[in-house]
Image (cartoon, rainbow, N blue to C red; front, side, top):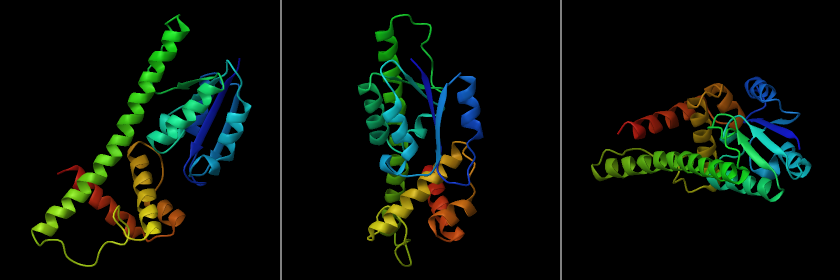
Length: 209
């Protein structure tokens, strides 16, 4: 049995120090770390971790969203870990170490993870939905003027929609304490800083309605 840690940040210029410190305090024996975003196939260190773990091992991460960017991604990774006979420990979630029955502890931990996964995904979808509703109301009142926004959830160009969701993800990570500036987001995604601020303004407007 081994404690195996995983740490990830979304860009190469972000710092892994906070996650690594927490993993070391949790007495993790081996740590896989990487600086990149994307789905599983774009995260070689995560793939290495999933191939490395064995039955009885414990995968440890600081935050649930380090494993993936949406509920389906996270649940698929958790399911893979489970199928390998290993368990998952999220350091910022309640611990059930005081419960001796391993089956009950595993069940409670799974319920907590499912709940947090749902909340995180639901929050993101609610923000996008409020934004769409706000635009619809503005259009109905004749207040929505100008060209269609290039980067939006409803953009016709799939690439523009992708860039929009990437910007939203990074702005939400900033709200959760991840250190990344607007300049860094703009540089990584190849867009103007004004574009980031415009999207941030629209998100702020949607969440305060």
